[in-house]
Image 1 (spheres, rainbow, N blue to C red):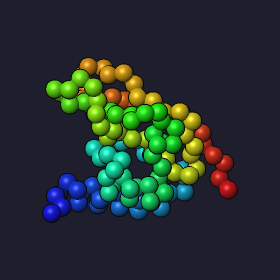
Image 2: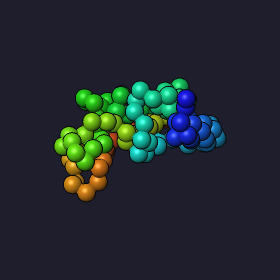
Image 3: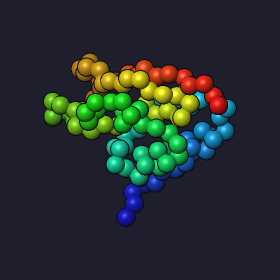
Image 4: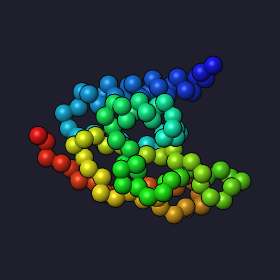
Length: 115
């Protein structure tokens, strides 16, 4: 059985990809997606021509979400996505600020010349 959250995420992904197709400028998306890179929603975004910057230039698991009872982050649920007009140079997870249950991520990107 598929739960409502799963269906909602797939609908959100379809909306994002439909919006992306209407854009004349390069597309960059930063989000707390609350999905892992093994999810169907993640696979749909990458099939829709958005690239997961961490997979391109990140190092390690890139876990960003902390469970309160566990000191180390275990899941990567925060993402920097880009289309083919943007090239990632570097991406990293920042240290924990002690306030959020997420680590921030930052990246360096190059805008490519349109063909």
